Amino acid sequence: MALSGQDKHNFTGPLARLLSLIIILFLIATFIIWRIDSPRVERFRTAVTDAIVPNMEWAMAPVTGVINIARDFRSYQAIYEQNQELRRELQTMKSWKEAALQLEQENARLLDLNKMRLDPELTKISGVVLADSGSPFRESVLVNVGKRDGIQDGWAAMDGLGLVGRISGVGEKTSRVVLLTDNASRIPVLIQPSGQRAIVSGDSTIAPPVDFVENPDLVRPGDRIVTSGEGGLLPAGLLLGQLALDPRGRLRVRLAADYERLEFLRILRDYGVPQVDGTGTLIAPSQPPLPNQDALDE
Amino acid sequence: MNETNDLRLWVFRFGFVIIAAAIVVVNLLPLNFTPRTIAPPDVLVALALAISTRRPDYLPLWLIALVFFIIDLLLFLPPGLKSSCVVIAAGILGQLATKGDEVTPSLEWIEVAMAYVGIILAIRLVSTLALLPQVPLSLHLTQVVGTLIFYPVIVVFVVRILGIRRLSITELDALMRGRG
Image (cartoon, rainbow over the protein chains, first blue to last red):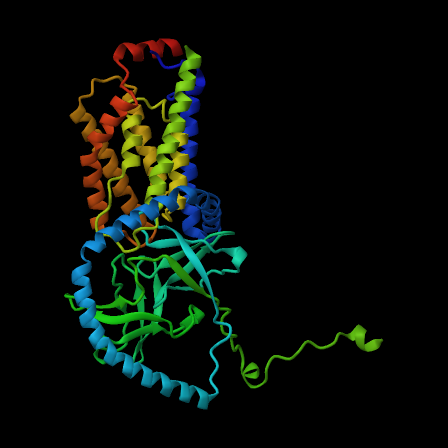
């Protein structure tokens, strides 16, 4: 059986070579453009993802379900030991519950005294996780909320307990959350109670390192790590997790969010803090627009 | 004869796209959110290289480029980086295949190993030059080792199940005469 001799299947002919060269140059050019002007190409990526991934859901959902059932089944086998362990934990928890109740009452009293209101702009949108990053090289998830739900780039994604990541790339129906563990993730944080500022930079491990701590002597393992809200990047005060020391003596975060199972994420609406540009705006609020001249003449 | 060949060709190409889509769907399943320390074998690249080194006309470079570029986009990888490397590697292997030299399985394995290591080295080099965050070396190493160990399985699949064999010298001769 010979190859068909026609030119269009002629893979070594000059035309085919030229075509191959053009394709390779196109791919390389895309990479270079992406590196120089990332938002444009990322928008294209988001559009492609948005067009393809929701259509794959019919195939993905049942498979995911079956695998999760199988995992659950395996965990049932260990249920007896787990039960024993839970009973022990329950004992300690009971005392904690007592403490928490007292603190809650005290907190409620103090909030009442303060006439405290939670920031009304900090409301949330819940999304279902559609897909993970698909390769071990990046750490991200796709959620099923997008531009049509009012999602914007840069918003914070939390699970029930802690920060999970930031929105980076919003499509019409889907958006991508870059997880804290991704090696491109950088989050400015505050270490409490010492109030030290630092950066949590992902490095493809489950516990991202805490870099640029001003004075490492003031922090100790177990300290709470929350977002600092610097640069208007994320709302301040979102919990990331606890500080920990790895065997090499490097500071890392033990993340509060349960990365083993991300099923639903809450995206926090955050329209940013109004910036104070000059001294004038600090003293007086911005003026309402003056009625225009035509209206005055009439 | 040409018509049936054409049909077979397009059925085959369509099949490749389906296999690629299946692999991507399996990878995208929302099951694993924690960073991994080992990477699975790169089945699709191995498949593309195994076919390219046998019948490059079955899997034209534009199709490889299209499939791998979309995968770059979907998997949130630098767009065009891996895909261009794979296209170049497949192109080189395709060129070697048309020479009609006798190729033993071990020689083929060495060729593909060099091609695949080349792909990964190029990705790491370009990532460094472009100041991208570098992927942990353990991931790339395990991926290279896994892919190369897994490669003979892919070859068995390609030869036995898809029925794609190398052209013999006489067939290549016929091809060259046909092109005249």
